[in-house]
Image (cartoon, rainbow, N blue to C red; front, side, top):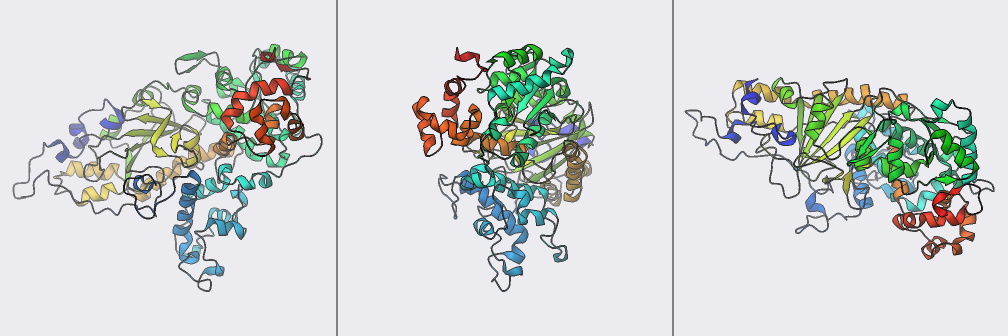
Length: 619
C-alpha cells in the first residue's frame, strides 16, 4: 500500500499524476541492493513483439506519407484501412480453416478466401450494408465460427463489431446503396411539410397544455420521401432511439412514441431525457437541449402557416420538429454533445470525474481499487495504450479511461510504464440509464472535441470525434485488453528494485487478462447491454447512430436532397432549373454535403413556395 502512496509525485493532472513516478527507479530514490552490480538506471530490455503493418495498418509508419514506409504500405484511404482491419480479423480468427494458405481441397467447405472481403461478397457470405444478414457475421455471433470443436476461442464482440461496422458503413459501399435501401419510388410516397405539420398538429391538439409545452417531434419523413421503403427504415429508427438515450441523463431508458401508422414521426417529452434544463454549450446558454440542437442545426427553420403556427403556439418553440439525421449530425458532436449530457466542454477532465462522478483517482490507486492493462496492440491508436477502470462514487456505474501517445512521443510503457506523460486521455463512463458516454482530453487534461491520436478510419481526416467515433467503436460495449505490462515488470522486479509492497501493488492493479476481461464483460452486460435491451435495440452488429451519421455525412444524392426538401425525386429533378446552378450536378451525380447545406434554405423556399406552411425566413 505504501508504493503508490509514497511515490506518486503529483495528482494535479489526471493523466500524468495517476501514472507518474510509480516505479522507484524512475524517481531515482531507491538504494541499490548491496551485492547487485547492475546500475539502478540501467536500460531494461523490452522483448515485446510489437505489431507490424500486417497486424495493424493504422500504425504511423504504415501510412503512405511516412518518411520511411514499411512494406507493405497501406493506402491512406479510410475505406482501404477499414477493409484491411476487417480482413485481418477474419484471417486471424478463421484463417486456420479458411485461409489463403490452404488449397480448396484442404480448406473446410472448399472456402479458402476468408481474408478477401470482395470474394465473400461475390459468394453471398457478406451482404453489403447489412451485417445482420451476412452469414459470416451470423456465424461469429452464434459462436459457430470458429467451430466449438476446434478448441479455438470465440471471436470477441469487439472483433465482430469491426467487421460489422465495415459492412454497414454506407460510405464504403456507394454502388450498393440504392439496392440495399430497397428504394420505393411509387406514386404518392411523399410527406410534404404541409403533411408533416398537419399530422403534428392533430397530435399536439390532444395533449394537455402543461405537457404540450414540453413536447417535440422528430421525423424520418425525409427518408421516406426520398424513396426508402418503410421496412428499410429500421436502422434510422434504431439510430433515433439510441441517440435520444445517449443524450439523456435520466435514470431510465425512454423509447419515443410514433404518432403515425408508418412510424416515421415520433413524439418526445423533453422531461423524459432531462432536456428541459438550461444547457451550456461552449459558454453559450440555452433554455433547454432542444433549443441548443436547433440553434446548431443548419436545417432547422421556423415555419409559418395555419398548422405550423398552431404547433408553435402549443409547444412554445419556433422549431417543434426536426429530421432525425439532421439532429444527429450536430447533437452527437463536440461541445453540443458534452453540454447535453452535462459536461463542460471548456473544462478539465479531472474536475469532471471528481465533481460529477465522485471519483478520487489517487485514493482508488492507493487503496488498490482500480485495475489497469497496458497494451502495444490497439486498433484505434498508432502507439501503446494504458487502460484504467474505476467505480463511480456518486452513483452506480463504471468509469474507464485510456492514456495514449502521439506519433513523436518517446514514452514507453515498458521501459517506464508509470512515469510517462501521455499525449491524450479518452474516457468512457456509464450514464444513469446505462448507456455509454465519451470524453476526449488533450495532454494537459483539457476536454476537447476530437483526437489526432485515436483514429477513425470512417472519417476522411482519420480524427476520432465524440461521440460518433466512440459509439461506432463500442457498438456492443467495452473492449477487453490483454495486459502486457504487469508480467513484464514483475519478471524484472529485482532489476527494478521493487520491494514487496510495490510488487503487491502492481499485482493488484495490473490484473490478469481473465480478471480484466471479466470486468469488461460485467460492465458491458450489467449496464450497457441492459440499456440496449430496454431501448429495444440490437445488442450485436454495427452501431445505428454512427451508421446514420455517416450515411447523412456523405455526398448528397438526388433522392436524399428531395427528401430533405419535402418533394419526390421526380419533382426535384423536374425543377432543378429553378435552383442554384450547383444543383445541376444532381442530374448525373451527387452534390457535396457542405455545398448542399449552404444552399438548402434557398432551395427550400423555392420548393415550398406553393405550400401553406413555409419557412418564415423565405419572406
